[in-house]
Length: 157
Image (cartoon, rainbow, N blue to C red):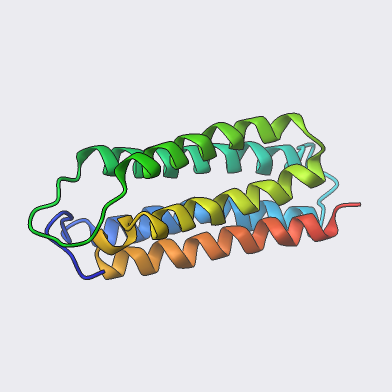
C-alpha cells in the first residue's frame, strides 16, 4: 500500500481536512440523537439517514472513478476493476433504497454499507494501489462513521 505513483501528496493536508469535516455531521447527528435538544425542530434521524446515503454515494463514485481511471503499469497485483465498479455501484444504489425501510433497520444497514464499501476496496486490491496514508485515513473514517451509525442504531427503540 505504498504505491504513490497514482496519487499526488500535494493535496494530502486538504484531503485530511475535508474528509474529517465530512465526518462532523455524523458525530453531530449522533450526539443530537443521544442528547436531543427540544428547541431544534429538526428530524435529526432522517438528516443522518440522508447524509449517510449522500456520503456512501460520494465514496462509491470516487471508488468507481478510481477503478475506471487507474491504469496499472508493471505491478504484479491483480486489480479487479469489474468487481470494484459493480460493487461500488451496487452499494450506492442500496444506500438510497435504505431510506424506504424502517429507520432502525436503515441505520444498521447504512453502517454495514460503509463497511462493505471499505471491504470492496480491500478485496479488489484498490487499497493496495492507494498510498498508505490515504488507506489509513479511509480506514479510520469508515470505522468512525460505522461507530456513529451503530451507536444510533443501539439507541433506537
